[in-house]
Image (cartoon, rainbow, N blue to C red):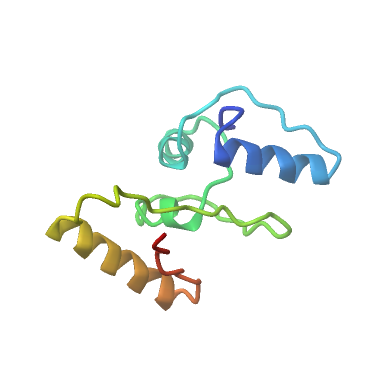
Length: 113
């Protein structure tokens, strides 16, 4: 399985294989790592996914192999500057930062212009 060209995850996977001078044999394109996990769970093949997507499948019998040498995928959390965050959004941001801190990942603070 692979991801669409032009998407952050799709480009990350393509660059990884290009760095190995390999071309992945893709039979199925999925829109997200969550979809890739679901299809892998059903026996449709193998997929490169992020560790957070795997957490949604705690009872799956995936064989998980870590991949070395792949660039990190950077996600950005954006919102309108003119509107305050809702209480639910603020709770989400706090939880996300907490999870990132627990995993030793940098959680950059939002920059105000």
